[in-house]
Amino acid sequence: MRRGFRFRARGGQVVRRNPHTAQETGETVHERNKRPQPPDAGPESGWYVDQRCTNCDVARQLAPDLIVETGGRSEVVRQPRGADETRRMLAAAFACHTRSIRHPGQPLLPSLDPFPLPVEQAVAPYGPGPLPEAGGEVYVLGQNSTHTAGANAYLLRRPAGNVMLVDTPRWNRALADRYASYGTVTDVLLTHRDHAAHGRRYADHYRARLWIHEGDLDAAPDADRVLRGTEPVELDAGLTVHPLPGHTRGSVLYVADERYCFSGDSFYWSRTTGDIEVADTVTWYSIEELAASLARTVPRLRFEWLLPGHGDRRHLPADEMASRLRSLAHRTGQLRPREVDFTGLRW
Image (cartoon, rainbow, N blue to C red; front, side, top):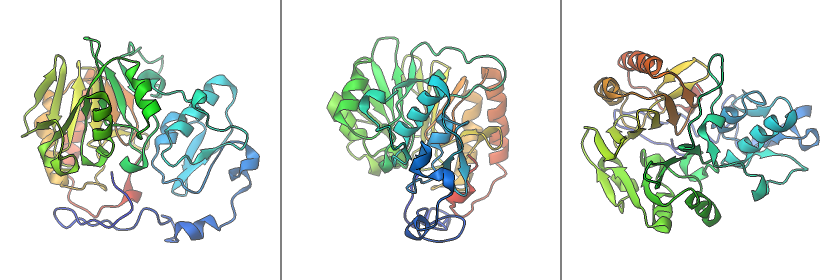
């Protein structure tokens, strides 16, 4: 997803407002920063969220009991209690792309960075009982980048011992070396144009292949592998890419071993609705094309872990996930083009 400019998409969709403007009043960030802060929002209270927050939701995904949305931005509602909650707060701080989660007595030292985080530690349980172990196959990378609007990225370990990145975090050589400790990185898989910023840099560092769909090729014109058309393609044993034009012309999703779905910005889990949703208020190409893509693709999908770029993650039994996807395809088919509006996102 992209922020910070006006954009006219296919079908006349227009960005309604600059997302760096305060959502509830229309005031600029500079004007908002001059407003008095509530007593519990400042450094004297421990962990807090500063005024650079863009309301990307990443921190709330990782520490939902500690950080909530208030007035179009994140806010710490209470301080962590115990080691587990402290770890979650640190995860939120290291994932925040603007480094807005601060503590006056706790510098964000590299030694405190909990990432890469096993995916089961980055997904809130849904229903009774613990989440199943992912077996060290998938990790959330954290270190989200301002150049990808704070998108989540993932590390996928394959049975042959190689590693793939799905989208990328901010570029940093030390981070790249850390990820290489999990295995030889052979591929960088981009889900769409909005998450392409650091793909070439990581691919060159690892001498890996960079993948993107032809519909978004202008965002990575030097990609090593270009996906084409709308039919699924098996990239590796057990790893299939499904072209899903809609959010952008070249959006795709990757499904690994019928367990993990890396959905980019095509759909995500919404804590607000308690269901899988599409970002219909932030669709750069065509919501009608996305509906057609879902109708074509959903019958072919089977997975348990929903892992999007933006929006929350979720684990569900495969049959329940499939049922919810069928419902999503039906609901999306009833949507019509509308103005692009970040305030309409239902995190």
